[in-house]
Image (cartoon, rainbow, N blue to C red):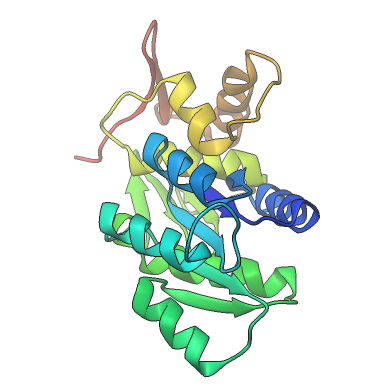
Length: 226
């Protein structure tokens, strides 16, 4: 799942980005209003963490929220602010925000709110994902196959979740990098193949077919059950 973090405080933005990454999300960062709207127009995000006080645009984060909401009615927006007043909260929610978090905040609460918004998002409509005999629960971030619990790292979970949300469709390596890593990824070129290999080992069951198919030259596929 891919998240856009919009925060003009570079230190805080980096802390949030790292926390989201450790939790298995891919996170991009924008530091002002125009950069946020450009990223939102170019990329597909599953959630936006949006600071209220933003430079570069009249109306700050409130206006960014309004513009984003006009372009997409279903992407969850979590608004951050140092202004703890009922009026500002109401304005933010009326502008299109789905939730509100007052600074300073604990990262554990931020992550809990992100998980809650992801569960409520229309694109995450299945409480439990099921494909190729694998059950994946986004609420608990756990996986099972043939009655066996499968331990996954945060990145393994992110790759498997994206494949399962697109079950029945071939997913390319570049799509997986876009959604399970982020725009700043500059690592090794075979990182996707490496994580696919990790997943195949963990998902393997004697006598059962492989969960993840390779379509050479195209990408990877998890078949739809039935």
